[in-house]
Amino acid sequence: MGFNCGIVGLPNVGKSTLFNALTSTAAAQAANYPFCTIEPNVGRVAVPDPRLDKLAAIGKSAKIIPTQLEFVDIAGLVRGASKGEGLGNQFLANIREVDAIVHVLRCFEGEVTHVEGSVDPIRDAETVETELMLADMESLEKRFDAAAKKAKGGDKEAKTLMDVMEPALKVLRDGRPARTVISKLSAEQRPLFKQLALLTGKPVLYACNVEESAAATGNAFSKKVEERAKAEGAVAVVISAAIEAEVAQLQDEAEKAEFLSSLGLQETGLARVIGAGYALLDLITFFTVGPKEARAWTVRHGARAPEAAGVIHTDFERGFIRAETIAYDDFVANGGESGARDAGKLRSEGKDYVVQDGDVLHFRFNV
Image (tube, rainbow, N blue to C red):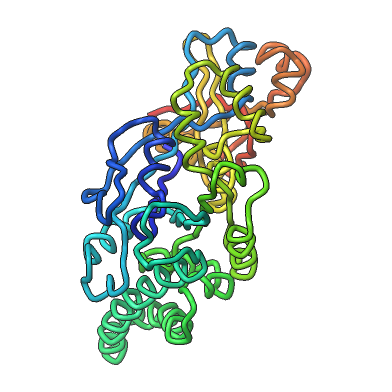
């Protein structure tokens, strides 16, 4: 499993249409009225990676298994969600469970009714963010007061937690999302911050849903969103849910490529979302290659070899001995594991080895 993203936004911005297109299912009902998505739908999609196909060809692997990305389509939010308006409480509970937020913003005019009566993606982004900040502030204030009481009684852990909560509360009261404090926290404090599970502490990817004619270049609406994302250290991707829906219906890869090319596009919106999502969550891909299967795995950037082994199976991490490692370029250049070994490109790495993107790994373990 790579990572999961909650697709959020106001009603009628194209969330469910995008979800259906990305997962090639009709699991989420897309309709022209608010709250057409009542329960969060979950869909998993393969992460496209041309390196995996090349590795499989070289390794003569019988199966190719890409890593996966999980999308959670979450019910639309409206003003007052932090106070339980609309499906607010459900929305907030569902969003706490995801690793990152894909915030779909409507960047097109059209017949579909907008819940606010007009198209303004910046206003929409602020509406959602404000509700999330209000919910975070209420939650954090309660926890801060509880920790303060424990700290007065000499609880050192409570004091440590207060040192993380206090700056987060300050930015929230100043009208800024909690994630803006992460860069100022120490390496020891960051895991504690993550444990707070703050809604505005999660990384955000803005998906600018534009009309088909603007899919390649964006439009005035999406340009404003890109400026906002840049200012706050977030990421913005231009995507046309309508085009993604059409692409999802095409089975032949050559036909897909031809269709995208006719629109001035080199890749699908899905590929852009995945690329941006990987960068946002600071993830990398490593591979395992053998005659039975060639497989891609996702691990956080900076992970050491035993952690990567644990992604495959907990026994691999528990009994880790070493990781036989070949860089992707060396594996390809030397025609596989045997050639890489003969060329001296296969390395035996220990527990302190930091896994690199594209590494082809074979773990030795003993349980």
